Image (cartoon, rainbow, N blue to C red; front, side, top):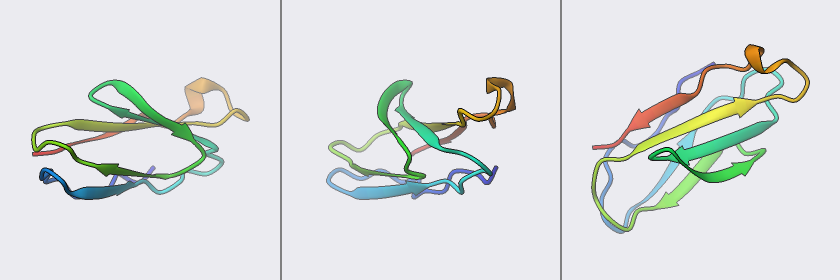
Amino acid sequence: MEPLTDPDTVCTGSTSEYVIAPPLGAVFYHWYLDSILVEDGPWNFFDIDWVAAGTYQLCVDVSNACVPESADPAPQCIRSR
């Protein structure tokens, strides 16, 4: 699976879009910010309006109901600065 791409600098009031290339057959994306689920759905992108500058970790976990969970790709994460 291609890595998660993003702007890695977080500024107060900025908007960022994070994108991951869909793996073959991926149908559902689980987006986590600092280990808290913030979005579930069929979208391979995530937009966020930052309310505070800081260091955050954004992760996406991809699942496909047509394959065993063990065949799902590993979660991809990025840490802001």
